[in-house]
Length: 231
Image (cartoon, rainbow, N blue to C red):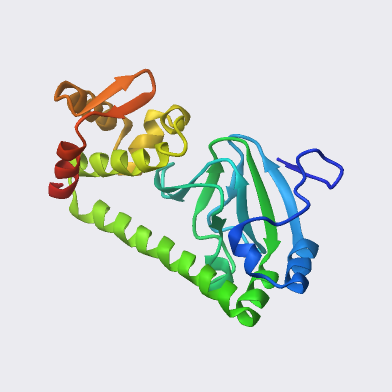
C-alpha cells in the first residue's frame, strides 16, 4: 500500500466518476480537500472487520473481495468490489466500524474520503444523497439475498449460484476466475474447498461447465440456473 501524491504519474487530479459529477464546484473542492489517493497492492487489506472507520473508500481501478470473518479462520465472501463502487458506506449511516473485511484481488487504486465529508454531502446535496443511499440499499438487498442462499440452499445450489454471480463479473473482467483460488470460490458458496472441487468436477462431468486450468466456462447456463433455483 502506498499513498499516491500529486507528483506521481498515477495521480487523478479530477474526480471523474458519475456520482461525483452531481456535486457543485464548492462540494467537489471539499471532497478533493478531504481525500487521499492510495494504491493497494494485490493481497492488501482495504478494510478490516471491526476496525474503526474514519473514511469511505471509492474504487477507481482494480478488483477486491468483500467478506465476513468468522471463527477459526473461516470466512464467507459477499461480493466482488468493482471500479466505481463505494466501500464502507455503513460507517456513514450506522456504527463507526467496518462490518466486513475486504482484500485487493488485483492492484487497486482507491480514493479515501473522510466520512464526515460524505455525511455533509448527503445532508446538503439531495441528488448525491439519493444516489448514495440507493447504492447502500442495493448492497444491503444483495447481502439479504446472499443470506437467503446460505440458509435455504444445499451445497450444489450455493455453488451454482456463486458461479452464475461470478459469470456476471467475467463479462467485464474476463480474468476473474484466474484471480480466485478454489478456496475463494468455496468461500462464496459457504462450503469447504474439498466440496467445491468435487462439485466442480461433477458439474464438468455433467457437461454443465468446462474447467480449463483455473478458468471456468459455463456451458449449460439453463441447467446451472435450475440447480441454483432448486437448491
